[in-house]
Length: 399
Image (cartoon, rainbow, N blue to C red; front, side, top):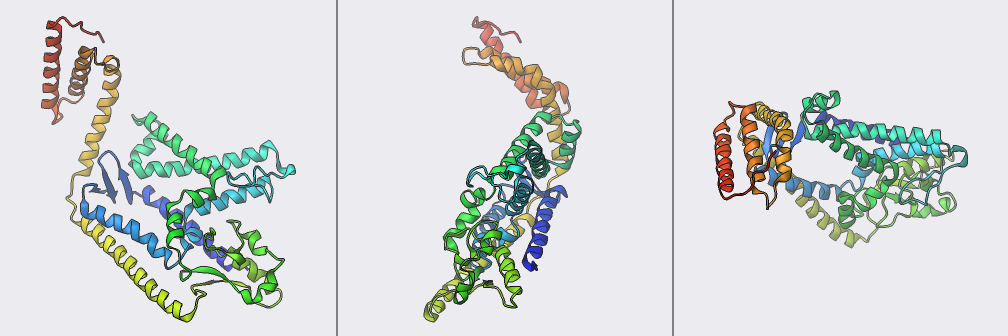
């Protein structure tokens, strides 16, 4: 009898698969090289003030709208951090004991003596590391085209080191998060959660306890046992970290089902205040919800308008130009690096030689590039400066 648990797991995995599919299928990508958001291969530049204004409105109003309507439902039913944390907790309990605790904000390192074996630690670490690697690839796909990511995996890209460094950092931070951080991130580092503590209201969706039957659960605490955030659902305080997951409601219902009665916990949007206060707060809540909804819809409209009116460009040509520049950098960087290393304030000759070397090498690698006139001028100008230094008896630095 776990109606909320099953539904929640379906929603959680569905949201995670949906979020991962967005970059993997090329629906959305952040292109740092061209300073743009890419939707289905169409770029929206960061100087598109309509789109950016709408995005700011959506980012600010969407959380506020959830704070005053569905409460913490996003955290418990859709947030990937909570899903992965619960999954990591389940693995920890499986291989290190039912009461194991390895969290950074826990009660210290708690491991069942019978489970404290290197093989169990290895299985837990290897599984979390594999998940971190897969999530790291999704993050890479969020910033790079598919051909670049596949090229990195097969070792055919010219930027192996760049990809390896970025992937290492992402995998490291995700692994630390899954291993020991977990709910600590939600409690102290999540901006969504911080905002919720500022704007939360009892009129939003929350878990409510039937106080009239409080004597039935004086010595039970079954709901607290199954709570993933380890709070007491029958005594939820204003600043508790309830995520509206419904696990406590399922547990209480299972326990009372044996007696033929209903559980003491349920989801509710009612507030325990007087009728006059409820009417006043209800009016404020309606205005707040309406305002947040209006800002959200306005932001969506501005984003759509900005994307629709965005000037189209030949994105394939731009990527081809970027690829040519990467090839040029791959050939010219080793050639001119010694001169660049010698470039200092007291060695201006090396600076001029390094600049001329870069421009000349670029011209050799791509002589038909539209910037060839600029590169030729760069070579002549730096050679002119170098000759002036030689005339003034400055020694020429050899590459």
